[in-house]
Image 1 (cartoon, helix red, strand yellow):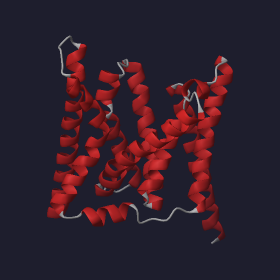
Image 2 (image 1 turned 135 degrees about the vertical axis):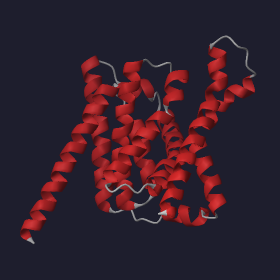
Image 3 (image 1 turned 90 degrees about the vertical axis):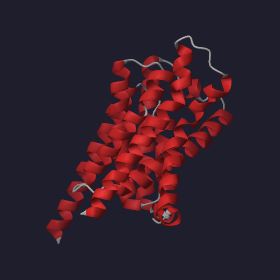
Image 4 (image 1 turned 180 degrees about the vertical axis):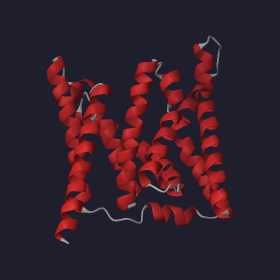
Amino acid sequence: MMARYTNKLKITLWVSVVYVLSFICYVPALLEQNGIIIPNILLYLKYLYVCIPAIVTIFLLIYEQNVKVCLAQMLSGKITIKYILIWVIYMGAGVLGSYCYSLTVGADVFKRIYLTVTSLLTSCIYLLITAFVEEIAWRGFLLERLHFQKKISSVIFVGVVWAVWHMPMWIIRNSLGVEQIVCLCIWTVLVSVVLGIIYYQCRNILFIAIWHATFNICYLAPMQLNIAVLAIVISVGTLLYKTIIYEGKQLG
């Protein structure tokens, strides 16, 4: 009981510190938007934002003298053909949704965002690195520390916490409205469900980072359409999985 209480306390402390430090990264930009002159060097703090959860995680693991064990656990799983095929399906769904949207509006969203092959490769490398840094914290640390009775509760909880963490970026940097933020929150929770379930199955944070980057690279349609596409894929996948399990039990 004491160990569970200590774990909850550490999770609460971790989330609180991550939120506070992440918000501080955007304070200079917020002040500049309100007409206050800020030294340029402080404005670069916003680029540290994505690293904050991982930095806090590493410091906590160092305090626990548990860095090597946790990092080894994050990379302990094997990537099987089954999960590679599932990844291809999710990637294909994003590309197809973006392509259908391009046909509808008469403009190629891929060419608009990725002007050249070089820009595409650069984006892929950048998004993979940032995804890996994020996943160390959100799936590799936070999800591993949660002990809800149902795993789906854990992945949804991480999704909600992860969505709230994005708020300073969405509000201060991107100046998004309420409707856009609500859509992004739904999208973030759905992505968290997929990443969390796959992480539970394969326990390989590098593979999860590839999934994370894939969502950022391939799902380029408006957020409402992306949500619909992802929800359909999740629903169909869940239905097929339950059907296979049920038929397996029947045959058994």
